[in-house]
Length: 87
Image (cartoon, rainbow, N blue to C red; front, side, top):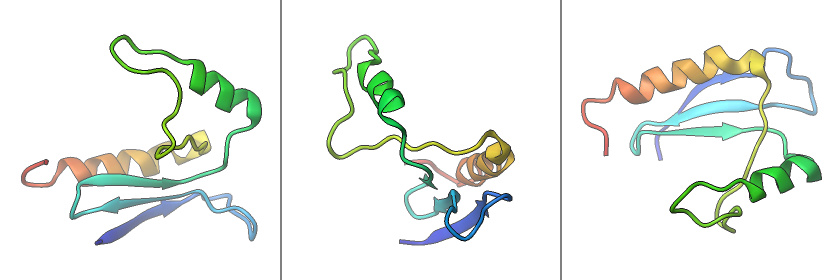
């Protein structure tokens, strides 16, 4: 896997490190963030989209990152979108 580091929470401390990478081979954004609290996890699991099962599949997860990382996420989106061809 060819991970490209994009950025880390600028307010990160020794015990927290929300981070964003891009997997350039797969054209995917990879995010490390905080685990949601029970209430947020339940709200996400209850969310429904027509044509899709409700809940969060075992192979997926929900993470939280601070809004101050929006520019880092935009940069990751730009990197992925600049690929010559998306899968």
